[in-house]
Amino acid sequence: MNRYTIVALDDLLQEFPDEEMVKRILRTFSCINNKDVDKFLKEKAILFSKQGLSKTHLVFAPHKGRMILVGYFTLASKCFVVKKNSKISKSLLKRIAKFGRYYDEANQYIVSAPLIGQIGKNDKYKNFISGDILMAYACDAVRKAQALVGGKIVYLECEDKIRLLDFYRSNGFIDFGKRELEADEKDDMEGKYLVQLLKYLH
Figure 1 (tube, rainbow, N blue to C red):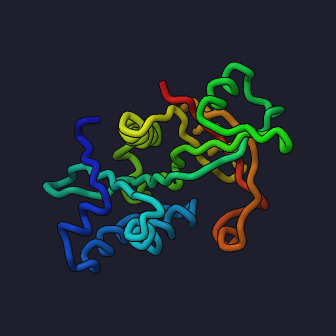
Figure 2: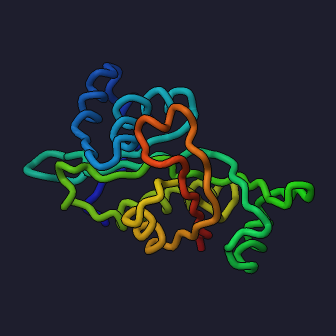
C-alpha cells in the first residue's frame, strides 16, 4: 500500500487557500453507481469538514508524473443502537456492551463509535486501487484515532444491495440492524432503509 498517499481534506484546504482549487481536485472524482458518494465529496465534504461534522481523507496514486485522486473515505463520530436481541453473537454483544450504555426499557445499547460515512473509488481510475485496500486505510485511520481516545468498534451503513453487502462482509463487517432513510437521503438512494454493519477492530 506504500504507493498511495493519504491526504486529509483539511490539510489540502490549508495548502490551497483558494478553495476553488481544492474543488477542482474533488471534481476529478466520479462514482456513477453511487450518487451519494459522488455528491458528498463534491458538494458537502468541505462544509462538513469546516463544521467538524466529519473528516474526509483523499487517497492519491502516482500516474504519468502526477498524483491522481483514486478514492476517498469520510469518518465521523456517531452513536448507533444495538438491540439486545439482535442476531449478532453473544460474545460480540458482550464486547460491544463495554463501549455502550444499556437501556433496559428499550432492551438496547446506545454505542458511540466512528462511522465510515462515505467510502468510494474513482471510476476514472478504478483499477488503480482495490476496495479492500481503501477499506484497510479507513480502518487504520479509525485505529489511530482510537489509540488516542479509546474504542474498538467501527460501523457503517449501506443500501440493501448484494454487491455492497458482500463487499463489507468480506472485510469483516457484521449486520446488526437497519435505519430508515432520512428525507434528504431519499433522492440519492434506493429503497426505504440502510443496512447497518459493524466491525470489532483487533
